[in-house]
Length: 186
Image (cartoon, rainbow, N blue to C red; front, side, top):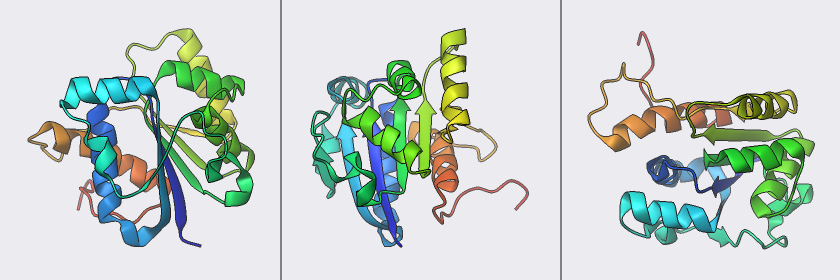
């Protein structure tokens, strides 16, 4: 089965991560059958603020409103096998950890967890408080993967996008996609 991927973008700072993720997924089209995007309203505003454009609209994929519970990935029967939330706000993290499916992002995460598929949350906050840590623990115990937006530097990134790619590449590795990236010791 080819991958069916949903990317959720929330209003946490770090739109460059979402942009680099989508750009990279466009280069990996041979590894997915379906790619869907759902964004919060705050995510659209943060993207505009941080990147100065609304280019998130330009990717040739399916877009779903965050209140559209008729989206295919709102049900396990659609067999989406990967969900990446990048960046993931602490509010979204908390709602997922509590099982509150009040929008399409949290419903899709609930579906991915209940179906025992890959949920990867790229959290973007610092520092963490104890509530954040306990919510991350809850999601980890439920089968999700917490991947903080912590870039690496050993590949000597020169731009913000190259720096963001160090995290995005890690996420795509966790998702099981075949990517070409810097590998330590090689």
